[in-house]
Amino acid sequence: SRESVSYFGAGPAPLPTAVLEKASQVLLNYNDCGIGITEISHRSADAENILKDTKSALAQLLDIPTQEGPDGYKIIFLQGGGSGEFSASVYHMTALWVEKRRLEIVKELGSEDDTKVFEALRKAVDEEFKLDYLVTGSWSLKASQEAARLVGANHVNVAIDSRKSNNGKFGTIPDESKWSLTPNPAHSGMVYFCDNETVDGVEFPAFPKVDADEYNIIADMSSNFLSRKVDVKKYAAIFGGAQKNVGTTGITIAIIKNSLLTQLAKPDLLRKLNLPVGPVVLDWPTIAKNNSLYNTLPIFDVWIAGQVMQSLLSKATSSSGPKIATQQAESEHKAALLYGVLDKYSVFNVVPDKSVRSKMNICFRIGGESDRDDKEKKFLAGANERLLMGCKGHRSVGGCRISNYNAVSVEKVEKLAKWLEEFAQQQQ
Ligand code: PMP
Image (tube, rainbow, N blue to C red):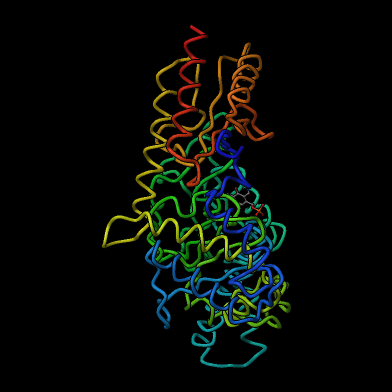
């Protein structure tokens, strides 16, 4: 049964049982209307209400300033996963840079002469335009590769590749003094980072030391969304696939600064400059203008995310500040339980450096070079026997990985901690 199994998969990942029980009812009959939630129109009043309630819950959890005007943020739902937003970040931040530079050139030249402005702009793109990437794990690496595919590697500046100072492996975030951001912030379209690297277990301990007034910051929070507080005002955009900490596979949530939505270069100009124009289904202004209903949105997935958010809100204890604080404390407690055992026994080796350990994806190896295959196999087999499932590391890195998402209860983490302890003692 669900209760007897503890599942630590990295995504898709566990959801609260109460939400799934309610989901099984609404699949058959939503709001007693005799029609299931996946059957109702995405343009119905019910769907609009689901969207409204979900956005409101998210805004409360993360304290998102949702007012109109340039400093406010829009919450939008898209399809295409986290990977779709790797591309969307490039399309939008390129278009934002081009438009800003175009306006500067018009001012510098004191003329709107299309040919002159275009020639100066083309030169500026060639000589100046960069997208900055902090590559700290396999997902930010993939995002940077997508950028190179779309705009060309000459426009991508890898400001950190943390493998370089760590024997070719991810697991650290070098000190800021070693980052090579595009020196002139006016030449940078964005600084992109992945807040939590799901495969490598590396999480930024705090907002990176980048001046958010000078650079546009974009973060992938796919695997630590709703696990901790976020100072949304520092970001141009934040995105995350729902299928880890928030809901079912099928929607991506994005939080986008309003000022960005109205200052993008037109597709015609981008095409003339040989810069990419994204598909309309990834176009943030189009999705925002249409309340995420430009095309058919899987409303069931939004409903699930909304229910998960409601359950987090109902747990929230503090009356002031972001409501996610309560969940953050629980996540930290659960992570501390697991790292506590892993640090206690020398048979375990946590992969990432202590300063950047993820609270969500806990990656470790067992034993040394010569015996780790055997030890890890034994540990995983013993875990499975105890119905502690999904602890195998990602196929690209091997080892073990425990995903400590919100729906994994303290009790289940305690069970796993007990097995870690028992296993370590057997090895002594
Ligand atoms: N970013 C991160 C941090 C991820 O963990 C993942 C998926 N595991 C992705 C992006 C890609 O997401 P998707 O599979 O939804 O495209």
